[in-house]
Length: 168
Image (cartoon, rainbow, N blue to C red; front, side, top):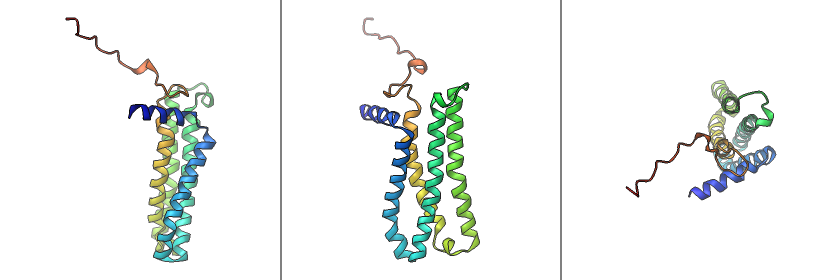
């Protein structure tokens, strides 16, 4: 299992931001294709519109969050700053950009009694937010602890192993 995780880390660390963005958008498209029949049978064309609107909002916000997190993680793009501080600020900025706009728009739609609100746009926002959060986490988090593109972790934070008691 550890070998599988190491290979996953190495693969993710070697991906460009464009490839990661494409994978995120592809996952949202697959979720849209799976949700479309449910939206149509539940609310008709307005249900499809609410589902598409929610996917567009969550997709654009999660794409911006992914680009913030990936861009802030690379030391080349963060000159003159502590890389650990850049990791934290990128993750926080990405979380805020990925969560606040969909949540605010969903609450406004739910309270405004519009056709999209009545068709369940807030529920679709929750579905697509969670989908994009899972995919974005898989594309960003494993590579956070790696020190190079091969996926091997740095030895700087490891504690030395205890000496063996075999000879005593």
